[in-house]
Image 1 (tube, rainbow, N blue to C red):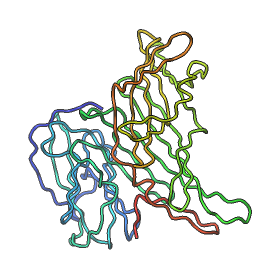
Image 2 (image 1 turned 180 degrees about the vertical axis):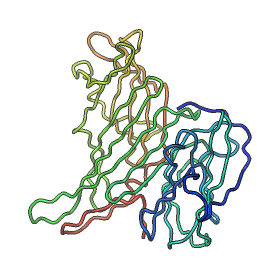
Image 3 (image 1 turned 180 degrees about the horizontal axis):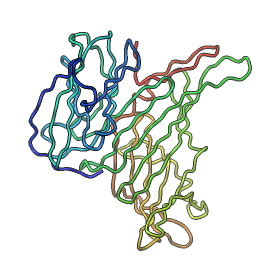
Image 4 (image 1 turned 90 degrees about the vertical axis):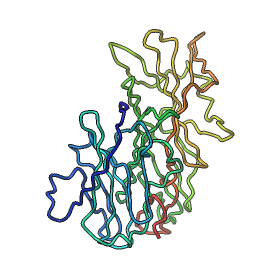
Length: 341
């Protein structure tokens, strides 16, 4: 995704009433649950030019890109909203781009009473002082989350997708005292047109997530530049003996579990590489990426101990915050973004 300079933004309120033509809307209002859940989603044909930037309702004002920011980032967001009752409304501010200029319109649902709005989920992130990307949706036993990972300057590295599929562990007539969750973490390095997927297993017991288990996936991968493009393959473990033994880093006095090492070999000199480490902080439930330099010598890769770049995600705590676990029977547990009681 490319950065884009924004000109001064002027608000253009637009009330979408029941007489508005649905085909003219850039945003769809999708009711996942007729009592509680409403999703605001950018239509496919507008995803390259529009992004949901702000959700306003009563005293709640959640801004994704602050007005004083000089740069903005595309967002095909689905914003997850929890309502106390049906037939309430919320206002969603949508920025859209046209000929390198950014415009803004307000989209309002048709209902009138905004005072019954109760809670907003998936948008309360710890750092709203830089551009961030939000995209969450709850679909029965699946939790889907998309975010943008950025460095301190706001430059995007990857657009990952988490998916947590909940399954139940049962043996014969034993009680179901826990279950396993698998995260599928997909990320892309746009500058090199590299895409990769990490699978991480967690055991959930009484609402607590275990430490991440990546034993069912490939721990180290290598991206080699051939015939004008990168190819990502499993790495030869003999070349990465030290890397295989290193399963976590300590950054700012906090342990970061390594989920994946991706060695991106230099296009001109394949004995040099950048190692992209996909990290997970089990205390804060945050994902991040640290980049270190690496060099090939004497038959093995030597990784530097200095982080040359750091990319952070907004908190993913809402994925692992709460879990409903059935005591017995055939009912399936559900992982909620937050406690919805």
